[in-house]
Amino acid sequence: QGDDVVEQIDIGGPAMVRASAKNYANVAIVVSPESYGSVIEAIRAGGTSLAQRRELAARAFAHTAEYDRAVATWFADETLGEDVDLPAHLTIRAERLSTLRYGENMHQRAAIYTRTGGHGIAQATQLQGKEMSYNNYVDADAALRAAFDLVKPAVAIIKHANPCGIAVSAPNALDPIASAHLRAHACDPVSAFGGVIAANRKVTLKMAENLRDIFTEVIVAPDFEPEALEVFRLKNNLRVLKLPDDWKQEPMDVRLISGGLLLQDADRFPDDIESVATDWELVSGERPEADAMTNLIFAWKTCRAVKSNAIVLAKDSATVGIGMGQVNRVDSCRLAVERAGDRVQGAVAASDAFFPFADGPQVLIDAGVSAIVQPGGSVRDEEVVKAARDAGVTMFFTRERHFFH
Image (tube, rainbow, N blue to C red; front, side, top):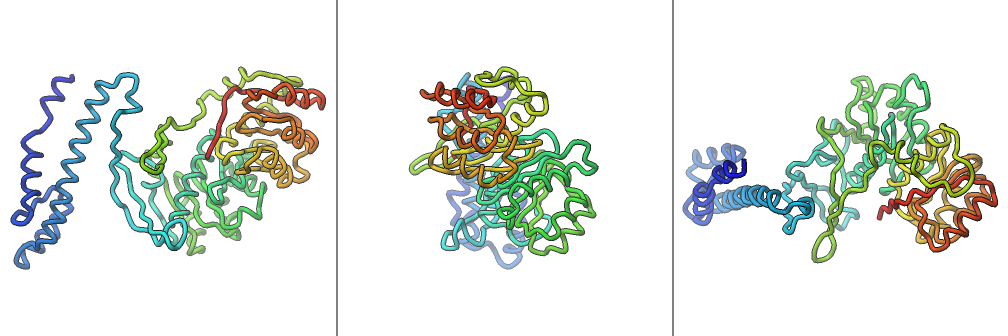
């Protein structure tokens, strides 16, 4: 009950802690058992120093600030109503886990912080390998985003925050996660060199053996077979991360901008995406058979993990060509087709946003794509649909965009 919670809010305790911290010149205030060892050692050596008491005071003020934040959050949840997830005042509490060798580039300082209540890559356990870098963390998080969007055993391979291969296991595979890795790697083996891999299932011995001769920076998964870890120990530089047991995708996205930050709902697919796909608007061709529809849904889901402008070509629930990060959509189409090569014949395509002109889908059609899924909504939708109809290519409108910047 609300009144009961209010009665539990401590007023005197935080006041005494703050008063002691304010008088750090003469008082050593200890608010955490983590400080006991150093304080006892200092007392045995003759007493705490001014510098140590100042550090303890800083921890004390941080402690009461965290308490006040928790109280403020509770009141906000009680009063904000429909705006509870977009609060008027936002406080993000994080503790420095470690400093990193450098940031995105060697001249930039960097550190990793763990957020209170976090259940993500920052809370993963490193089982072996070199120290994680700033870029390793960014790529590993992107890989998780891609792999865990998929329900079946799946693997995503990431370079520079973009996928170079995503796949689920082949039907009836004896080792599903090993199968998913081989199929993801086949999309673009050149780019996969030095990649970061995420698996949404326990990594098996077979998958580890498949990785034996492939240079990989990081592999992250919910768990690893002991035999797989034995194989990985032969690769001293490979960083192996085990996700926390309570790992989950974040419900909100936060991004710093100069002078502030942006907060938004995380872009997530509904659990019943297959049911949602039955409501896609068929604007060209005939509704495909179940296997082809499964491919379209796979392409649509994986497209969300690709930086805009994003084009994904897929076959048998595995990417065969990816075009990403281009400043116009037709160039992304060309890039995806080029990377797919002969595999583009009969593949399906997904676009994260509408085609502003018919030239993009025409590139895909001319290359041999059999079906296209896209949001629709362009003022030139009629021209785009006509290009698909003239070629006898199936096209769906989802009426939902999935930009990823």
